[in-house]
Every structure is written in C-alpha cells, then in structure tokens.
Length: 180
Image (cartoon, rainbow, N blue to C red; front, side):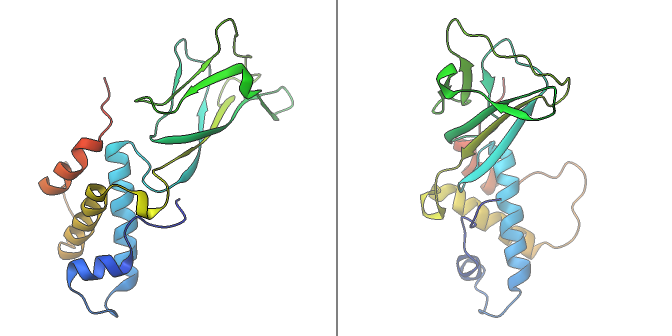
C-alpha cells in the first residue's frame, strides 16, 4: 500500500462537515477503500507504490504492466532451477514507462531467458504512482472524497451489480485506462 492516502482524515471530515472526534477509524477505512476501488477502476496507482508483477512465460509482445503511471522498473527477474530469482541486467531490456499501457521489451536482437519454473517464473518489480499525496490529480482526490462520503452516508449493504455513483465515475473517467 502507499505510505499515505491521497486524501487526509481532516479533508474527509471537512467534506462531510463532521466534528474532529467523530468516527475517525471508519473514515480512514472508507478513504482507503475508496482509493482502492478507484485505483482498480482506473488501473492507476495514485500515491507512489511498489509492485511485483508475475508472469508464467514471456509474452510474444512487450510486457504490459497492469498499473500506470510507472516511475521506475526496479527489476526484471527470472526463476532458476534452484528456485532463486535471477535479476536480468537492465541493459538487456527497454522500458516505455510513459506508454499507455507502460511496457517492457527485450532490446532488438535479444531474447528473454526462459524461466526454470512453469508457474510465476518471471517477476517484474516496479514503482507506480503520481508521487506523494500532493501530486495526485485533484479530480481523483475529489472522487475519493465523494465515494467515501457516499459510503459513509449509505451504510446498508449494496446488491449485485452496484456501480460507482455517477459523479464519482465522471471524475475518474479521464484517468481510466481502457482495455481493448
């Protein structure tokens, strides 16, 4: 998880017009849940986070990372017979961190080493997110506040097929990474 949430408890209390002592633990949980839901909806990391993405085999096309924006690929590793993971020299591959989706490919004329295991034999470690909480785009922060407030005000269980409130979805829409 990120070191901090994009929205503070004080901001959520102000948005809901609550006194400083009211339901702090619940609000913190709702902020984290709203961030997580919106990160899943947009396929983006909001605040800097470190991730490990595993693959069974090398794809025939560049590896597409599941989150954006990517700030750094820290390691690409392949499994050895011993079970250890061997880091591949970064000079062997290139990273398109700004792409949609962010991608990694072996340089021309290179071939990826085959993993010794059949499952999860490839690991890509990367850092994703806009930076600290202050760097998160304001529409995403507003969407978190609105979704947390919606859940705070509507505490009854929601049925199957429940969607994000329309305003929240509209705020997140420009940041949503589409799948083709």
